[in-house]
Image (cartoon, rainbow, N blue to C red; front, side, top):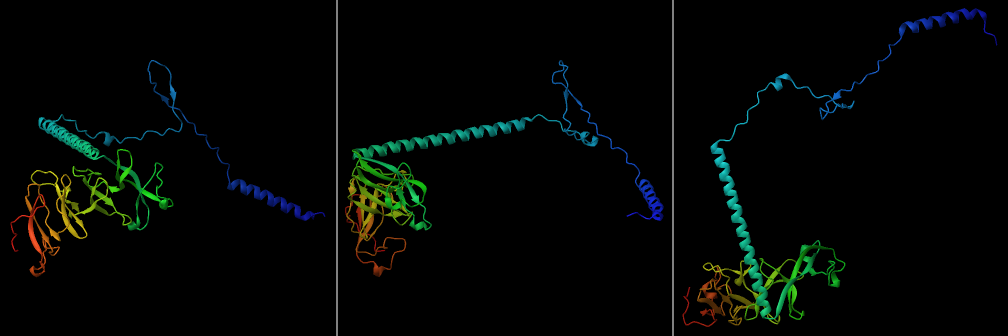
Length: 337
């Protein structure tokens, strides 16, 4: 189809006008100059070498320091005074003296522990026993009272098959004794407590042992045991410490006479001399020192008679008297109070 001729001049004029308008509205843009990076020459490490290094174009320029900052007066370092030097020397001398005393004390304690261990091993060997600890671990029960300390093998697995499916936690040791042929005599159900132990048998064949009770959890009970484990007497304590683990206030030596109970009755024994009295007293007072010659006991009396809060006098029936360090009754009569 042919366009009408009378429209052609109009289209041509509009086209020319648009071109002129666009040209005037948007003048030609100037070309953007390409940045030129000038590498600053680096100072050679050795002036004798004429080599120069080219700095990295990405290196950041050093921050300019304000002239007022660099003009601050810097304090001059003054030498220490004689008084300051004397104080420093005195402090050094005190530190060295303290460390020397501390190390000497630690060495003395280690020597005492070594000698005590040798004495313990020799005492046990004299009665034909070798006492030591075996590896054990706690069962990880949520109920703390249900946790048990069980013996484990070299891989850490329980020796008792009842605990093979239990998750095990903290590692400890359980102590017992074997004879010189390696046969178990004292079962490995005991704990080392207060750093004493595991056992030291006296000349009479008795030792104090901290027994780990199962399944009551972390409860320890003290017993006097003999070398064949055929006698096992519960030890009386003073503020949770057995008598023979207390110290004589004058000599600082451990007490030698301890109290034990059987069936609710109390007796006395000496680990070196054996049983001093049978368990027949309802109320007793311990031997508080190795120089104490006598102590008060009572047969048929109220159990709390010799305690800190004795019962009323009408309840204090029975017979009270003194015994000596051999367990023999003395003729001296105690006061009525």
